[in-house]
Amino acid sequence: MIGKMDYMELDRLAQKIIKGQKLTDDDLRQLLSLTEEEDIQKLHYIAGKVRDHFFGNRVFLYSFVYFSTYCKNNCAFCYYNRCNDIQRYRLDMKEIHSICRALKNENIHMVDLTMGEDPYFHSEPQRFVEIVRTVKEETGLPIMISPGVMDDRTLSRLYESGADFLALYQETHDKELYAKLRVGQSFEERLHAREFAKKVGFFVEDGILTGVGNDIESTIKSLRGMQKNEPDMVRVMTFVPQEGTPLAQVDQESSLSELKIISILRLMFPDRLIPASLDLEGIDGMVHRLNAGANVVTSIIPSDSSLEGVVNYDRELEERDRDPKSVIERLKSIGMEPASQADFNKIIDNNSIRSSKAPVVML
Image 1 (cartoon, rainbow, N blue to C red):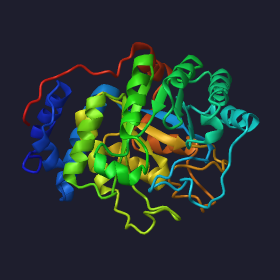
Image 2 (cartoon, rainbow, N blue to C red):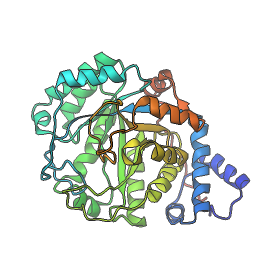
Image 3 (cartoon, rainbow, N blue to C red):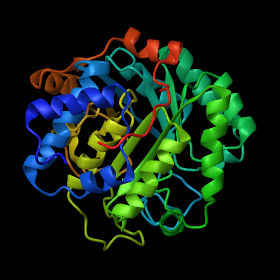
Image 4 (tube, rainbow, N blue to C red):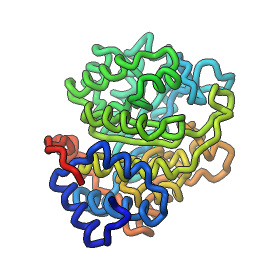
């Protein structure tokens, strides 16, 4: 498909995607099967063209405040699962205040409040509601929450208290694989939480893992599952084996699959937000993910922060290199720049990243 195209043909294909052409399952199989570097670069080229049409060279920046590493779940892939014997923390309001003050004047577009499914907050959701309300008042910025599965009433209260985005990753839409990854957790409850959040008014994010035994057909199930739920932000992350977890001995794959899937997500969701996480390979990895079609940088933390991340490739490093200044300098070096806050607020105010339906057409 792509391998035989010259760059004029690639430009024409990008225009077809922009105008609403959709990928078939056979298209997805071909793209996921690409192995030649030249072919993969052509895929990234098309994704970049599509991304630039909708967003230009502007990138959105999200801070990351992992305020509790306690969790009641036993996910096979997660360092913070309840059975892992690790040091944990739970920030108090004063500490959260301090972090938000450090971030609010740093060209950050949104604050991401993340935790495990901490029983302290899940048993008394008002505690989390108060954190959201306080951070909103302190920063005046849009708020993303990543609290795991919460009930309908709590989600409504969180939205009313100032939360704008809900990040709730399915990890996979292949039910058999899901049961192995999110041990003992309901597939349907996670789907319902995102669906209900959209009805309330949240923007929602779905995400998948790659490198956890998902073959091409399993990956297609996940891509179609995300598409069916019509999320506003879509992400993929490479699985990184974590010490003390059931999958600790699994061989880690390269980020090649993730980069291909980022480009495919851009072709499937041309006008949506697609993150490049700093939590996997730092700023160098951010560049690769932006070149693949992403338009958001996530997991930004203050330069002197000891906050945990989801993967923490840099847990033992003295210089974590994930602060806003370092990110912006690197963006400018590759011809990109932070979007304005007005650009991001427009997305929220105008609901502008919801896409219209378009017919399925063979490429």
